[in-house]
Length: 222
Image (tube, rainbow, N blue to C red; front, side, top):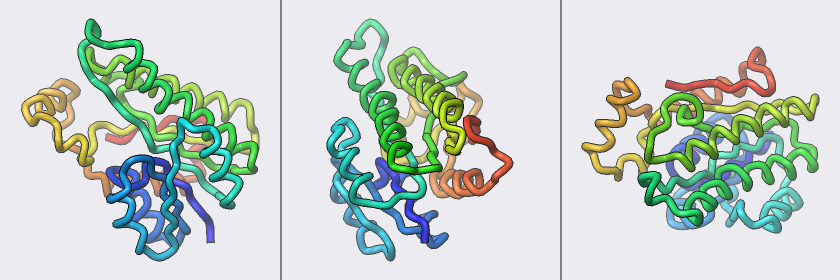
C-alpha cells in the first residue's frame, strides 16, 4: 500500500484529495496546522493518520519525513491575504510567500532528500492569467511555485513532480466570501461556476496516474 502525505489536508481541496486517495486504497497522512476540528473528522477513516504539521517550521518538516515512509507528497497548504496594493504590508506579503512558496520549496527539498520520487504541487491559474489587483502576493507565490516545480524536474531526473493549476473551487474559504465579490470574480475570468472540490480531487488523481504527463508539466483544471 502506497502512502501519500497531503499538507493542508484537513479541509477544502485537501480533505477531498484525502478521501479520493483513501477510496483508491492509499494510506493517507493528513498534515494540518490550525484546522484541528476538521482534521478530527477524517481521523476515523481507514488508513488515515492525522498529524500536526506547520510547514513554516523546518523541524516539523524534517520530523514528518523521518517518522513516515512516504511515496507521494501533495503540497496543498496555502494562504491568501487579499487587499489592494496600496494597503498591502511587507508583513502580509512575506507571510504569503513564506507559506505558499518558501515552505513548499522546503517540503520538496526534504522530500527528495528522503527518497520521495513523486510530488504534486497545487498552484493556481492566478499564477498565469487570472491574477487580480487584490492578490499580488498570492499570485506571485504561485508563479514562484510553478518555477519550483519546473526546476526540481530539471534538477532531479528520477523525480516526477507535477504542478496543478485550478480555477476557483467551492472550498469553505471561497464559499465564505462576499457573494457579490465572488460573482464578479467568476465573471471577470469567464468561469461559469465554481469547480466542485470532489471533482477537482478526482481529476488530480487521474492526472497523477496519467504517465504521459511528464515531470515539470503544469496542468490547468477549469
